[in-house]
Length: 119
Image (cartoon, rainbow, N blue to C red; front, side, top):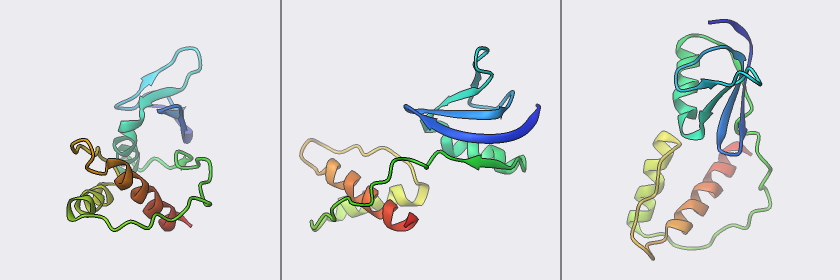
């Protein structure tokens, strides 16, 4: 594996890895010479790079700022709080609940929590 200056970027649901010619969970595009992987593999990719002691510039979370997002003043139910705690422990996951159970509220609260952590 050739290691240069390694950069991770996010483009339309895809993780773009620049500076490597191979990586588990990623496919090399012969035209661009970049590695591409589904966004869901982000954590696996960073864990692999950390485990291999490969330094990288992580620009995946350099997304458009949402600092003016209004605070949601809703009291969440126990199962909604449990879903947020579960997501927080892994920083990833899927919200699978029945129709009308408040999946959108959970997602908005996660965004609110995440923004508070990075500001």
